[in-house]
Image (cartoon, rainbow, N blue to C red; front, side):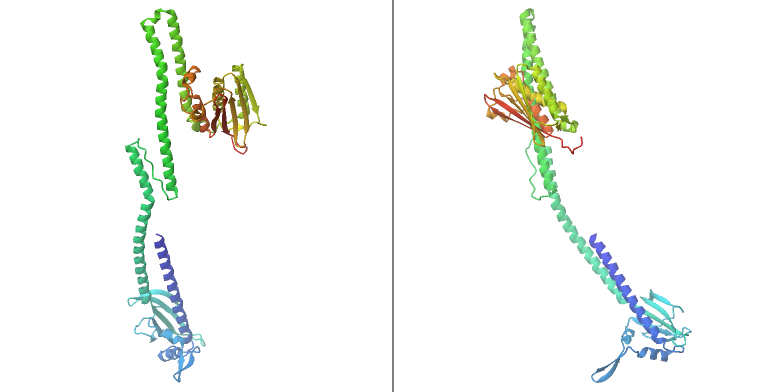
Length: 466
């Protein structure tokens, strides 16, 4: 298309330029003829016309081989085979002509150069009345016809060349377009084939091949692989989640079923056994209820970015409130708060979720404390994040377990955790909530000396709109 537009513009410009040049040329020759004929004082005839056009003041005298030769540039124009001159007397009768064509006078007034077809040949036709320079009377007419046959041959040849070039360019552009499209569509085809294989075998671990094109398609392949890994991770987590939940629910259900079977057989007649079975069943039911609630909290934590992305809360206010609540609930513990904030900070987190995170971590600190019943809390800022450190002086966590305490249902000591009423979901919920708000949480622990949980939550900048 670009070449076609270029060719059309080039063709039109060249043709118009050539036509304009030839028009100016024939007009100048006609005006010069008229000027020479105007030197006569009487009506033009063959003799006076020849004399007027023969020699002019512009002629040059030169010597060729010792012979005097008069050169008149005007004569060369008249000798052009494409130029036909016709001289008429005032009555419109032809008195002189060049060439072998006889053309009647087109009109008795001035006729500008226009393209007309005469004798089957196109050309410029001009008519100029001739007035005597001395008497100012009409003495005849000068009519010129300049054939454009050569011009049309050149034009047709130019059109043929442009058509050939157009066809060649079309073929070359088609081949190049096919090669380029095949090159650019190859990654998309690979992506389609990969998706097709995954559709047929969802359990396969196939990935999109890494592209070295360093363009948007390579970015698309990387994003696809990242999404694929995330989906597989979610699938694995879901399977693990179902297995863990089934395992966690199997024990309380079995306990309740055992007590009910015993009561159904013979224990219902024994008040002591009846009371013991009912109490044990109620404890297991409460634990199941807590487990279900924590599962719901964990599920909601995965949808934070959809429902609570624009929520904000005050840091100092919430931390002080939670610490005071724990002081009231656990009067036997000493809660020390080091507040390094000189002013209130606005956090990019929903207040209820911030409270839930603090409660989960502090509840773990209280739950796993031993003889030294102290919990230290400190809050500070590094301009972009609020840092909260919660330290207990309890039993600590083995080094090999520190990186796994945020996994679902993971408990360092399952036997002791069960006696403390934990399901192993609290820290997983806290970690998921913090990740959803683009924060961080990690633990530092020394076995037998205690654990420090460090929580980092983004702070809203002063120039951000709430």
